[in-house]
Amino acid sequence: MVEHDNLDYLREEMRNITNNIIRLVQDRMEVAKKIGNIKQQLNIEIEDEKVENDIKKSVMEITKDIGMDVEFSGRLLNLLLLESVKLQNIQNNGNKSPTHIAVFMKAKELEKAGKKIIHLEVGEPDFPPPLKVKEELSKIYDNKKYHYTEIPGIPQLRQQISKKFSNVVPEQVLVTPGGRFAVFCAITSLLKPGDELINIEPSWPAYKECAEFIGAKTRLLKTTIEDKWTPNLTTLESLININTKMLILNYPNNPTGKVLDSNLLEKIVSIAKDHNLYILSDEVYSDYSFVKYNSILNYEYDKSIMVSSFSKTYGMTGFRVGYGIANNNIITKMRKVQATSITSVAEPMQYCALAALDNNIQSNIDSIKRRINIICKRLEQMNMEYIAPDGAMYVYPKIIAQNYSSDIALVYDLLEKGVAIAPGSGFGNSYKQFIRISACVSSKLLNDGLDILQNYLT
Image 1 (cartoon, rainbow, N blue to C red):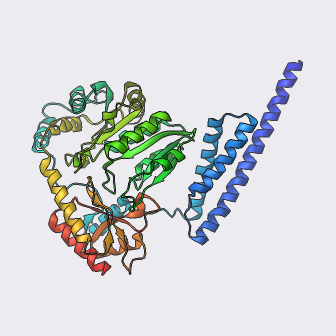
Image 2: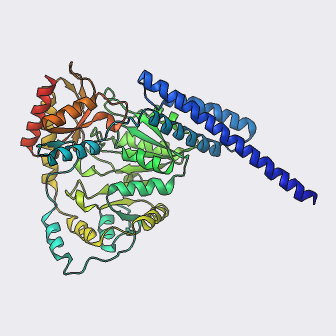
Image 3: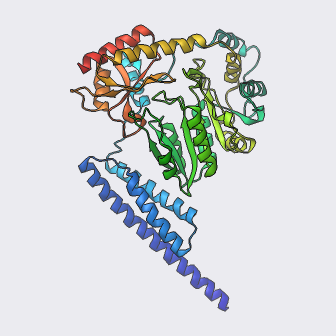
């Protein structure tokens, strides 16, 4: 009877403590809203890495003093920080910079209304898929290649993908609907709410979006044009803490075109090993590297995941076929996400991807390189600062013209004049003085679009 009474007492005490925690969390949320209002009035960024780090340091000290699990308290704090950012964004009317996709959709609306738009905002190559893909498409129906397939992809495709890389077997390959879903599978299967990943900016926004989807916290390692977009390794190590689980690499980089040299990449891998981090390496643009390129797979790090796609290499954006390569344990986890959400990539598209492999794409690479050179030469006439890309399909210049107000204003003004470009801030809030120009249209269209840009800036 005494034990039963004691149990009831402890349950009541736990209930009261929990209620008090909820009330304190609500108090914290109200304070966050007030801070959001002040930030809006002062026109300053919502996320402040220094303030968050100071809070985390204080919490870690308390956690150690009271003997609480440090990793758990860090994850709990990250959930609170994420909620504060969310609330403050709402206070600022969700005032996030539009991405290149948002600009693309706006351009499509204008085109429906009859306006002609030159598309320099999206990375969609204007060249068609290889002829063998067309031939395969014409035979799909008669050959009855339209059924469910194995979750990780048809064996023939996984076999051929694995042959592209040393020391990779088909069991390490997961075929996904585009490279984006391989990124999603990796992040959502390997991270938990409150975990942290480190992302090097400027960057494709999908990494942070995937992390936010599961309540993981993104720490930003910002690079600068002054440093030629090279990540600082001292800063990288300073961002790592007990909650850090993953590092994102994207080289050749979208949007800058930066490629890391082998020595720097080796040091990054060494840091990841020392801290037992996953490395998610997005290598979608690796075939468009104009300098020597090193895949993360060359380093044989057991906690690495390489992601690629058929979209850019073979001009197959609408086919939605990508893949991830990792050890069997990681691939098994990623497969569970795919099995739960979509089962598998459509069988016809997988056979088209198989037909695309081993086609010579050198003419595509040469075409993109020529167009990037055109952009760079034109930028020299426009009072813009830029770093010549090592690869990918874009140039990411800094605008220093006198009549320039913001990247967003510039983007929407140019849309009205008939050319779509991507705002620099869509790749990180610190890059509002930048724009991204895509080299995925013909040289004539490219020059016409750059004429409009030059006339606007002069």
